[in-house]
Image 1 (cartoon, rainbow, N blue to C red):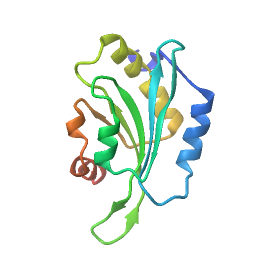
Image 2: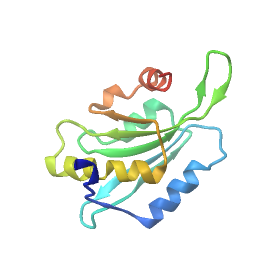
Image 3: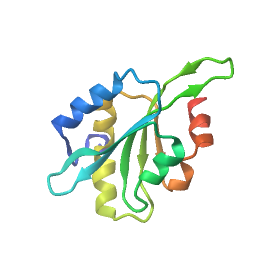
Amino acid sequence: MAENVRVCDIDPELKEQLRQFRFRKDQNNAALIMKVDKDHHTICVDEVLEHVGVDELREALPERQPRYIVYSYRLEHDDGRISFPMVFIFSTPRDCKPELQMMYAGTKLALVKEAELTKVFEIRELEELTEDWLQEKLKR
């Protein structure tokens, strides 16, 4: 039953930005960071980052507020191939307000579905988000 909980709507502009982000042609790391607009109960864009490494991405995220991140990551495989997997990362710090956690958690599945992504990861502490962590997750 909890799967059907949908606390926030997805802003129509965000839907278009997600579509454009998915089909971008650039070959660099980029992130689309999204947040909940508590007043309007919608998910909207917080920030778009180009040429952003994992460390810079981690530094761009607030320490005590949840965020959704769609991250296009340049991954070099052991055989020399390069791919650009797109991942969905849900950052939900342990010490954020329960009301915020509920709003984010209740909308996560709808947003993942809208973004049409299959690589979905969650972090509870920003320190977890490292290059090694992401590469390990992508090799599974």
